[in-house]
Amino acid sequence: MGVGAQRSWASKVNRWIRSLIDRNTRCYPLGWIGRGSLSLLLCGLVGLMSGCQPLLQTTRQDPAIGQIVLSTLQDPKTFNYALNQEFPSIFLFCFRGLTQEIGNTGELQPDLAESWEISPDQTQITFTLRSGLRWSDGMPLTADDVVFTYRDVIFNPKIPAESQAGLRIGADRQLPTVKKLDDRRVQFTLAEPFAPFLSATSGPPTDIVILPKHKLAASIQALDEKGNPKFLSVWGTDTDPQEIVVNGSYLIESYRPGERVIFRRNPYFWQTQNGKALPLIDRIVWQIAESTDSQLLMFRSGDLDAIGDVRPLRPEYFELLKREEDRGDFSVYSGGPWSGSTFITFNLTQAQNDRGIPLVDPIKSRWFNNLAFRQAVAYGIDRPRLINNIYRGISEPQNSPISVQSPYYLAAGLPTYDYDLNRARQLLESAGFQYRGSALWDAEGNRVEFTLLTNAGNKIREAIGTQIREDLAKLGMQVNFSAVNFNTLIGKLNDSRDWDCVLIGFTGGIEPHSGANLWTSTGSSHMFNLAPQPGQPVIQNWQASDWELQIDRLFAAGAREFDPAKRKPFYHEFQRIVQTQLPVIHLVHEIALMAVRDRITGLKYNGLPSWGLWNIQELELRDRQEQ
Image (cartoon, rainbow, N blue to C red; front, top):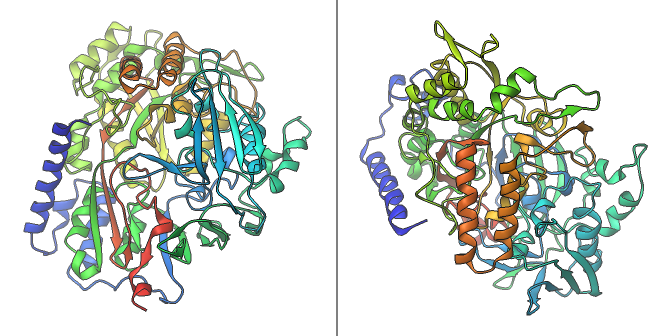
């Protein structure tokens, strides 16, 4: 992101914050907040109930316990890292990789590996593990675990590991080979130089963690009745937490579906700080909230220690909480542009299931695969209204699949789709669609109607979905908007593939290749045209389009170059293809906003990391410091 762009963002946020501070703390009428949105109305009611009264003070904790309470909007879907496709997840707390990306800078540092060496031809990387590493059950963590994780799990063709796509190298998409040199040294051999390799080893939230061979190897060798490794069904959320062996700063103490996950300090975690063993906080309660509105109520009543740590605060929450910092004993942080993205995408697959039935209604499939249709939808979404009403005017339109913090982000020269109903109607009519009164019909006489899904409880996405339904109604489209349970949504995207259009988000970062599982044609998160996946229901006649294959080639070429200047043209062209073909329609760049109790110290917050508490093992409680 250029200096000028950074100053523009900073100026907007500063003006906004000053305007909030200048306001007094009177209770605002509902009309100031509302405009018909249920979630905003609830926020207004909360303001009336407690905005003029003293807040309940901080979290109700015994300082001797050393506990903090956080929250998430959905139950975990799995405790098996290789099957995880959600954020946030338990792996943020429980597992580590060979390397770690420093959250607030994007720089790479050693983690489970204390060092690495790269051969002169850049095709061999040798990692040396730290001495004395142990799993949470006390067993040694050695090179055998690293080889097992990569060779037997991540590179296993029968396991749909999310991170596999990011390590396929070159035009032939070869995976590296890995071998043990001794108990502490592991050597990877690559088919050709591959610049993103070290970043791919950096652990949560998006990259590869190390798994325990002594607990999981048997499930790789054993096969079920379908010939799949039994590994695909181990470490589900019904597993006794005592069986989950980890190498991160916390282990799972207990899990009660629909209520909470409790994490307890891992006594064998390797890291120290100023002579103290980490983590510094003994226990974390990860409360499962029904919605972002519930999270706000919990935070204001003192039952949560942070809000906005896994996704930026909703702007109206920021406005409310900013006025209450002093009396609420918390601070609100603004971290600049958030690295994640929010978009809608249509189901473009033209494949059939094992019975030869199309996965997508052929009538709808013709619409979705018509570029003019997707472009019309992009022109038909009123992003200025979305930004003004839902984001309080402090976000900006998003036009790129690469995070603004990345040196490969293309700030100018991309196709854009500013709100233009006339242009949208022209595109539809040029593609054979026609209007009968105010309704849109295709050339075969079918009314244009489809379902837009998002995850329930995320009130900002629910508000966006409601507006998109209203916006596209102006183009004559009947959009049936529905918010469903997050795990149900993931099941539709990955298993049944039974969906039309989805509103969802994706984590970002410095390295473009970290999104390979979304953007390469065989990636396990390539949701808009998901290829056959190991362990998933059989599909027939899947194929990638020419532009998808071109993205594959660009990712392979960009990864081959180590010089950032030589890598840029490949990722710039990738961004142009995405904005031209519109497999996803990006919406807004959000501002990273988070509120945290003042008793928590050691925060390192900006908009780059997907998780605001990325250095959780270093966080400390002020009341324990003072004992």
